[in-house]
Length: 529
Image 1 (tube, rainbow, N blue to C red):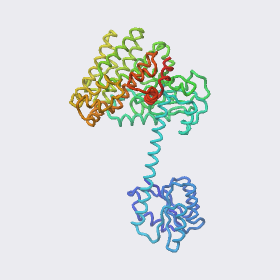
Image 2 (tube, rainbow, N blue to C red):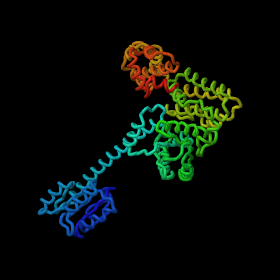
Image 3 (cartoon, rainbow, N blue to C red):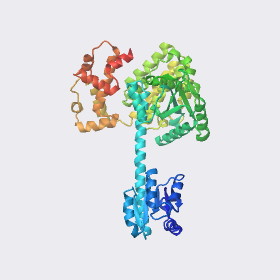
Image 4 (cartoon, rainbow, N blue to C red):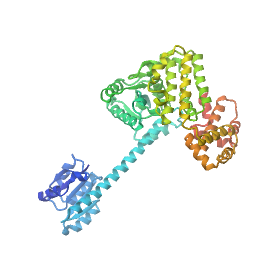
């Protein structure tokens, strides 16, 4: 609804303007009426106005002077001057002041309506442009903050401060705490992505009200559907956290007014930008313990660190790699990853509670894979599938591990039965050929197409449909994956590694590696050491 102000010293004319149009039906509301410019200025201070209809000739302050003052105070306001024929030159002068239009008395109802509708359309266009700009800015900001919590972010402190300042965030003393928020059972409660986004939006709005205003909070959407809170911790001592009351209050409000629960994991305070990711990782560890401690609670890393202790061997990258192999339906590699995880559990003799955390994390990856494939979880595993209850029924770890492996095989069989077409077989054959011939620096789309006996355009289309990425991107991804494995072994020259994965030029390989992972081969080796 566009707000309108009428300014005219004649009460009869103000009454005529009020009655001549069905304002509400057209999308307008007359919120202010004034008999002169002085009164109009006073009323505008308390009533936001979109469009002002102003007579030129008025006592105390005429329309031209009022226009000049309004444009200086409220540049977004649209002004339409109402003038007689003998004041036409004044109206032309007013256009130089930024007046959007003028109407000559006497005017028809249609003329007034068309003028207002034109301004309404312009206002909506500006509003949409502003909204689009804000959304783009928010998207860029969220991307930056997600990079900040990532372990692989390599900007200097000066570069990070500059980025923050672009978003009008001024960091005085870089000490931070990260909190991760998950809506409990979100995949089971809401099937549509739009519904989940709405619930996350509701949580974020309440979060802004619940948290202690004495701390600076930066709230954004993080990986895997989580809501992340980056708290500037100011001058306080490290290894402490701000009050948990705000987070507890948030959980109570969500449960009371939205009828669902959330769980919050909180890391310890860390000094320096580079350590934000460490606080984030701690928050994730704390959050994972909800499968042991229960949902609907605030869990700090400090409260679970004693239990986790040196057991926290499980790197978050395992889940990422597992999801990639599931997407590729690489059953053999999935089996190898699961076997490695389970062997590590047995070798380290982890506590049963920590085993539950790891197993539930693996199951969550599997459920995420089914969901992103566009299939309901209950169609794959049945209506009464409650993994968090099932996993505690097994009496031995071996039986638990076998059950989890079967879940993964079942999900791949289920999603695979919808893709058993000729096009899918062609794409799979092309993928197998790439994985065999990736060391060949000449390996390209045309060569792969010749191997599977189809034209390159068709192969490009079926490969993208089957795997969700281009064939060229898959060649690069597979080469980078193999390069990372070789770097991890140590003792190999960069030129030898480059040649082993299909690059004749070691320098170009290094640039490609950094572009893909965000860090150079040498930086990766230093991180591992």
